[in-house]
Length: 339
Image (cartoon, rainbow, N blue to C red; front, side, top):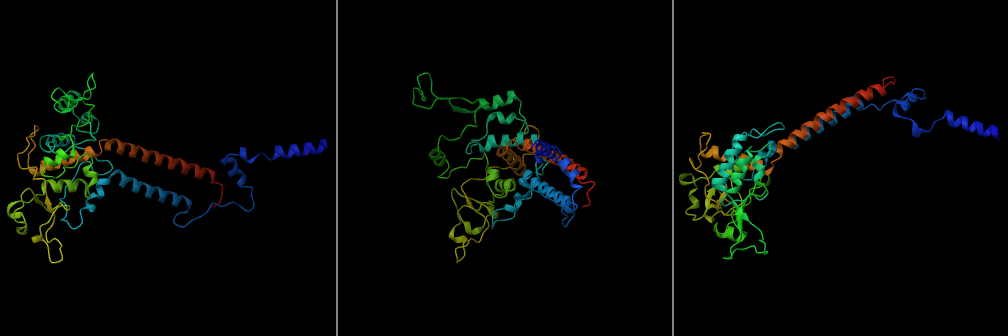
């Protein structure tokens, strides 16, 4: 019985548990196996080739994700004209916002758009954040102080003053952008029944992205450029890039299909040459103002875009280094195996 126990112990010592064997030990012992273990060989470069192809595919997909604006022009409104061609410095996986353009765009928004359109998801302090317009802290405080926001309840819990009006206070950098109207009913009453959309994510929410917003703002046609079938349209304005408005029956064929590009929109042309004076001396043409305010709205839709791109770049570098480590490990483990 003692000899049997010794034999069992010796077998256990000579045959260590697989749980304690690392990959290098397993690979080394593989050389003594019969038949010889061979790594699977696949078409197109073998196992390593498949891994490299997968990595390239992943990099391509990541590039598209890092640059959603690169494919935006292909998503223009169906049936409308081709969107205006505009190049943006923040396009592509390594593109960055033009800080001067963002500051001019904010000026256009503040002086032209803010009277009707809100930016409810943006805070004043974002204007001084990294990757944005780059206003200094004192400038951000001054910008915020020009707006009025609800003050909230006082010591007695009252939210209105002695006249019954809502208590207001100057905005702080931590406050969200002030709304131009207290509620939807007031917004419709001040715009002929139309509800001005919030512009926080308008660039991402519209097919065509910034190209569509730019084309819409700069694409109003008046006078002789308007289709004659439109006639007089009080309170309505023609824009060939707007596809969700009304079309008079005079501009439809016998099947009820529109014979013109675009539709009527309740928003009047917001920009005309010289509407905003830029402090840096940039020409204040309609196209320049439209481009700057579109760039600002594109940033407002994703204030942390530059940080996202940087993280994406760092991740790709990390994956490349990791792939190199795996390749070296692969070569080391299987160096003595015929495959």
